[in-house]
Length: 518
Image 1: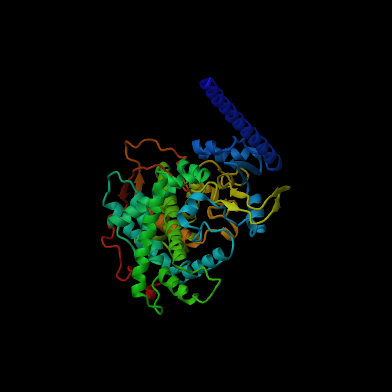
Image 2: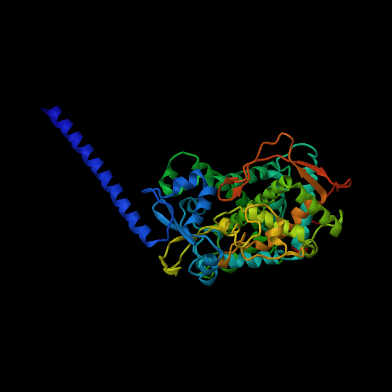
């Protein structure tokens, strides 16, 4: 009798559990239906996970398909709606005309786990963000941002890079490390006051983990963590993200401690020196957000943003040049005609090299390393194209759709510098070119990135010719979607275009940097 009752109890419990689960799913379906009726159209979400599985499976194609739903598209990340802006008009209306309302940053569990809410990039629109961004912009300008001194620094580093890759002349070379090292040395010279040699194994490891975190944070690992963040208490690949972040912060902390010992407030060497002085100045200010935790994370943000994005764009550029040798040769001919083999390029040369200038822009357009931009969040309830957008709604700009819009580009889907040339062969701007976004959240390193891309690219094509190894496998041009859309790992062959390449590229007094050189 007791065993019969026990079976009945188990059966009843099972039926109750099944009924509860069915009720929960039905309630979620009803909630989703109600939410979708208030939001712009979009792909059908699944209960609890939304459209997450589609974006995990094929992020690039999922980004493309949002276009079929119109100017605004609503997708669901887990249970939360996310509005995608699919054309330039919508992006300008939101990020420029209503910039204050659309310039927040959402709480993202993985990012918060790493940053603890400090820094610049992931901090929401408000007092702390304004203080940190304003200080960063002011300090970066003081240390050369937008000035000739940075151009000279980039040109010198380009010479270093050319010498480095020519060590492997005629042999298959993976360009990831030398390009990342070269690009990173520019921001390192500003934030750390020094550059790092290409053979520095510790710095090479740091660049490797930086690249790995960019890939992991935008992959299934990051998406699943953001959906169920309590997994941080359990082992798994997400723990690697935390270990990598701790390694980077540990490196910056060591530099900071060294700077404290040698700090001279009358002779500031770099961003860290300037920040340490600002902490001291702001001690009595109750509204101050300047402290060592923000120093560490703001420096990490600048290091990350000043390394990964430009380096990835240049790697896409090499792929496009190898895929289109006729474009590579035409750029080389223009460069040699204007500046020859020996003089380094400057930003002033852009006006005399419209084809090369257009090619750099086309690399950014088709390379499109952040197809959906960086996520924004509304700081208040607002209206957009007749829809009520509640406070706390996540917003993305579909930069892929905008930079391949058939209405605004002559050759939207193919790599062609003519997209940036007028009928007279002169460079012409296009309002739909948005690699740095728009509004209050526009990339604060835009001027530095432009100088790096033009001078690095022009210097490389001036001195070197790039081609695929004869046995190179076809490369998937969709790339690998992480926080940044990276190309697949590839190898290239480089050859000198002329006999004399400088053997000692670093001129005296170039590095380490001191205030008098900035």
